[in-house]
Image (cartoon, rainbow, N blue to C red; front, side, top):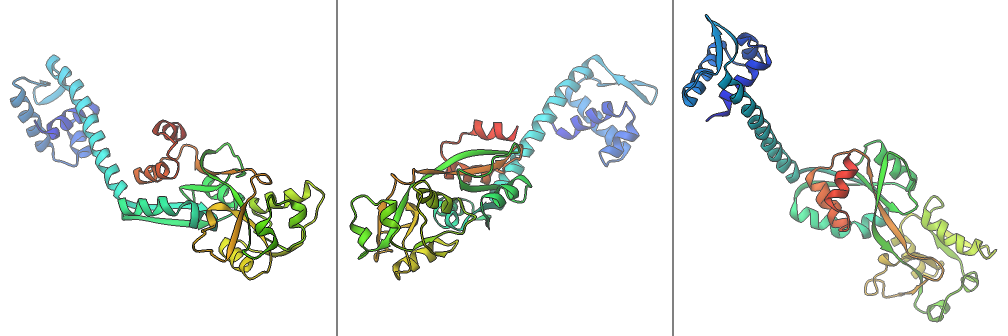
Length: 305
């Protein structure tokens, strides 16, 4: 049985049994619609339409039952077509993520690489921002999602999911006096210039707060938004710095020493932000699962509601 005959039947009913209107809706001629109905009636072995002369006036009792089934079958057929469209959308498209330079290089590296291997036709756009601008871009629909630290601005139009826990380390040259200190204190750090992120970044506020809580005022030698720049200048003796542990690689950063400072800055959590009600394409959902495995399909379904 072909769906076209069922489509014709349903459209005739929807158009109030006006064959000319049904033909226009289906982009077909009236004789074509008539032939489709005749073929369907022949296949089923019973009349579907009640006729008065050459005019169709309604459904037969049998036709009414067929119409109910046809509506369900066409609905299921449309659902299957949608699945096919989703599959195509999963293979190709654009995934835009608002985040910081740090997260672009360290937090998102593995999930982006894994996504590109699975979906090579998906283009990933990493859009640079800070806590406020990331929230703005997600809320306005300029990007698909945002990744920032836990202090990202909370808004009713956004939903947030924890994705990566981050610890911090004190970074110094290997020969630096603090490199061998048993437990680094803010008072000890006060003796040396400090390199920090720009003032608009939450990471800087957390670092400066450990001094402010003790009534201390550190000497800021340099600010920059790039952790790789921070490491370069620390290695050249410009100052010391507190950076996320993920940015330190003992082999690559062989001239630097890193000391844990959990006692000064508790671990913080990177947050994935999505616009409430926005529908994620299949490859975007796959990326979310790679970035934050604890997020379930049920979570994403509730987010889209």
